[in-house]
Image (cartoon, rainbow, N blue to C red; front, side, top):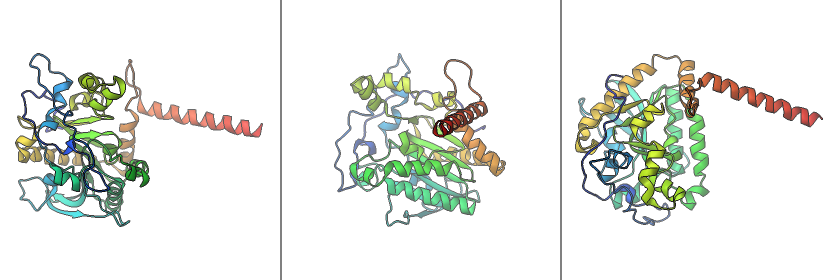
Length: 347
């Protein structure tokens, strides 16, 4: 894609600290019940080494443009997305404001949009924050709606992960995420996901199983944050730069590993420095990706999405493993295991 860079430019320069949406964890029981995470996201810039400890930090230093800024309200043609109508509810009596969904148009084309909405201060973070099972079930409902009406799906990912409190676990957080993962692989419409800030763990994947995964230049995508990974492996958050390097969380590295499919450029200073310019680049990237995907037939589209994820981790030290061969090998292994089980039962 011409408008999407395939290599990230390492961010340089210092950014002043600010109160972050991710500095507070939302309690779904009664307001904010978490602790300040001021020690997280306070990166330092070393002019001698452009490493992962600086490329992963700019998104946490200033308030990033959030999902609603790219989606609503009614905007003029030169801006972002127009005619956006937000849809609410999971049809089970709940509506999680941390996940925003709705229908909108770009240059006359109608799309289903869904994305994470973290909030930027204490008040917004109490209202929104990290997604709960209700939010993922709302997104699931909209996926079925889009599939039924033939609307391509665009998702905006920006969450450190799903909310992991006791109530969310009791309501089936894992089941809600797993249901979304399974459903997305069967949707017959094109899906494009964009990582705007951070995409963490299953909370990001629950709306991220797409044909195309695009990332803003300074965004990160990970199974666990560098601070959490360092605390688990080395028992100290001070090892987070080392963890970030091992995790390969930046857009450039993820494109190299063929996990991300493209990098959307940001203005100097990051997306928050010029949200309008960034939104124009996102709009162009969405249209280019959708033009490519809409040329595919239904079966080809489903196969494209499946093979994208099958090839992840399909190589170690040598050349990449052919996803088709990997899939055939897995089928053969399951067939042999089933045959052995039947023989054991018969014996």
